[in-house]
Each structure stands twice: as C-alpha cells, then as structure tokens.
Length: 161
Image 1: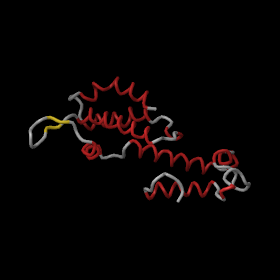
Image 2: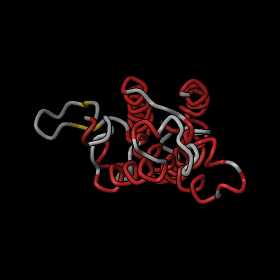
Image 3: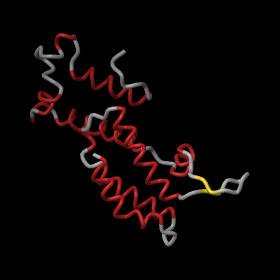
Image 4: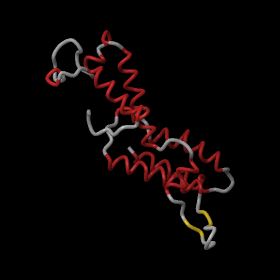
C-alpha cells in the first residue's frame, strides 16, 4: 500500500524540499501525484488501525518535507512542526478520511449497479433469499444504511449498535 508511495516520494523528495517551488505548488504535487500513487485501489482495502497509523505517518512525513521546520517564537530555535500544526497548515482531509470517503463512494456505486448485473448478489448477498446474512435477520441494504450512518455522523466503525 504505502511501499509504492514511499518509492515515489523518495524520488521527488528533493523537489518537495526545494525553496524554488511555492508551498501551494508542492501541495498540488502531493495531492495530484503522490496521493494518486498511494491511494490506487484504496476503495477495496480493509484497513487495520496499524495500517491507518502508517498512512498517517507517511502523510505527516510528506507534509513536514513540504512545510519544513519553523522557528520557535520564544526560544528562536528551529523545530519540527507538530501533527496538529501540520493539520492546520494542510487544511484538507487526512489520508485516512479520504480512503473512507472513497470506500463509501465505491459502495454506493456498487449498490446502484443493480442486481441485473450480478454485483449486489455477490457482494451484499441476495436480498430475497436467506443466505449468510439471513441468520442475523439483516440484509445488504440495512448494512449499507448502517455504514452510511456511521460515516455521516462520524461514529466509530467497531460494529452495529
């Protein structure tokens, strides 16, 4: 997942730390090139907390390279930016939120394709016949509703309830 992003990042890291480019241009390079490589196929990933942490570490590493160190106002010494400061400067969704958003968009596309093409039957299970979800009394549409409510209201992803 992050390996290809690391390889690509290391090939352009000198460009990102160059003072010849503005921070805005470096951020555009990050969003349009590096994120595309890192997030390729993320709609189908099932992320663990460890993988989410690795992705956040990768993103903070790139953002620290873009924004560089800052001089402390009190001591006058140079220091690394804290994660909160990076989030304030970047002002866009973090990489994990982008992945979750893309997964929800992909789930919506799959749900809208329709059963005539066979996607919902294979992904969600058949809505009218009892299958592995039938034992729980739950069908695919209830699960999709649960996921979207969790996403819209920002609730945790640990399970129904």
